[in-house]
Image (cartoon, rainbow, N blue to C red; front, side, top):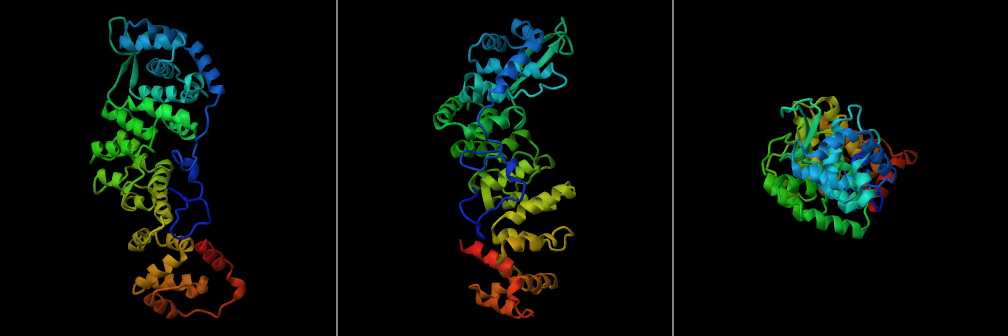
Length: 393
């Protein structure tokens, strides 16, 4: 987790600029889009129900699809707090709204209607409900009759799922306890356990359980993304296999920011492998560079030094050195036999000559003092003083 109580030292994680708002929120962590339910969503949902009433009438008739879901939808539309019914209704409304459902947030609307715990259950139900149109002869196609049915797998944090995680992160303590208790009853299949772990990542035992279940699942498997976004301990990451690497659709800012927020420096093995990903374009490679450069560890600095010959890596090193000036001095000094690193060491010390006043190991001091430095100019030391002040707080 990120310590935001004081100016950061060299062992604190500071998220790259603009990344915090992309974090999938967790209780006690960065806020991301965590916020209480939006009351207007309930009115928007009511209008959408009125607009799609013919399709919903076909659903609740029970002629097609799962009769149990049709009955649940009837109960929900009659005002009963039925999570499966709410999910089936939402699935139908989404299907028959080719222009989208507009400003409707199902998670917010459900929470406003029946509470956060109800909304969380409806979101899990929604992840495994699909709908189809049928012809009169029963063929599954673009016919006029609609039925809902369950599927065995979910497809990552799509639809209302991510917003629900934000609602739970911001919920009152009593509401959160109720939601957690009700979600516990949904942990009866592998897919549901993964979904519930994503919604409540602070239940580390639930996350650890799904990590052990998932094991060495292939990259890009949708359920795996839910798990990656739930991690908070290196032991959980280890359960996913020794060579966990992200796929192209797992390299967005939301995923990287959430991995850093949840795992801190322990995210290094995952994000560093992205530096060598053949599928990564320049923008994705830049994201991986920024992620590694934010990590407060010698190992992260070494990952960039190991790749100093890569075109985009060498320019990233001075920026990381500004964030971690003493660490950079140590790491550069240890590799000064490489002319490229020696040049970075000299530039680093010329910009920050007062680093020599720090308490340095003998071998680091010897390497630093061997660098030819100009006479110190007190007027040019403001950046260095700021760096050292941050380190002592």
